[in-house]
Length: 168
Image: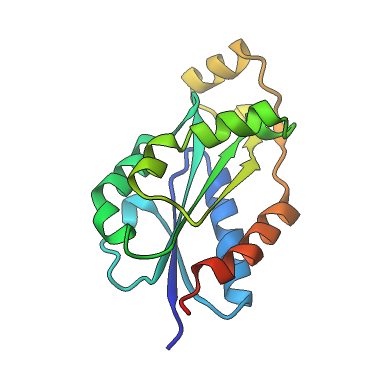
């Protein structure tokens, strides 16, 4: 029987959803059965032997729904391999400080359920798709618009993750 892996994600404007789909596709290529779903649509976890959870970084933190998901399911998640990924604009330069801050965005969930691995990826910012409030924030912090996602890095992380989440 093949393991069934869940790639669960929170997203605001779709960038993290697309990264989650890419992770799922890569795991399927490696022979895994994979469900990729938004966190809000997930009913239960009992059919999964591993879970990968992703969220964009907003104001230095994961989205609340991603944190609540880990809190709600922490008992089950502690018994299976779990990996986290974060998508954020601040990591586009991949400076050590930016990576440290991105890792800190997962601090709360990492205390609840220790992951076998974490992935940190640059995101996408299209100001035309943003809410008025988010547009004002990006203007204030002078965020660069564009698609900074590194699909090669996402695929490589998913490939490297497969043996870490597969059951022996």
